[in-house]
Image 1 (cartoon, rainbow, N blue to C red):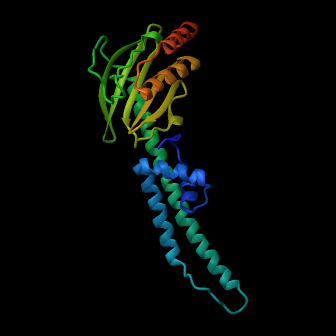
Image 2 (image 1 turned 90 degrees about the horizontal axis):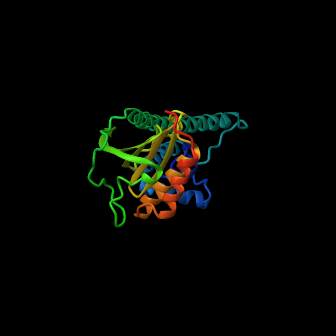
Image 3 (image 1 turned 180 degrees about the vertical axis):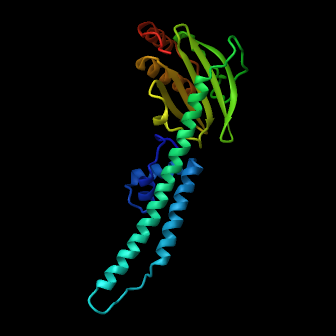
Length: 253
């Protein structure tokens, strides 16, 4: 989905009604094509609206006596439409928020449960992009050492979890999972640094606690760039990460 991932229920409603401009409509269509959850929400809205439309006669209504009865009928029909469509939008919003919040809590709990064995070595981790098996990434230029990985499960989905430790209290988690799961980044603890992006069929979430914002942003951009390109960090990026580490305060655990 992520273009950048969130589609508000109001936007889906406007899309179904044909009220979006061409660029917005194309964006929603593109996201729906790659995300079954969004496509299902659009289909549900269309079905509800079609059901409401079929319940209201197409033929012209003619009432004698000047129109108060006619206005009452139209007000009632409008109320039914508003109730059904509004209820559907509310349901979709609640579903999305609940699912996103659950994912945020899960990833945050996994980061807090730092159980990796020091010095453990992992085989190359899928997914594999480009000519190199990039995971686990070599982040030694940022003074972050890979300490282990494992596969955990949440809501029936496999989640790859990889951990890195710094020399001054930093702990960084990288998660990889299927792209139909969307964590709500607003639900993470404010003390956590969070970055989320999508590549192909998979989502990536990077977490760190207490790391300086500028350092975390540079680290996240470097990791995303490497994963998108399929190449390890280049020399210039490694130098930037090293400089950022030198000029940043220790992480606050």
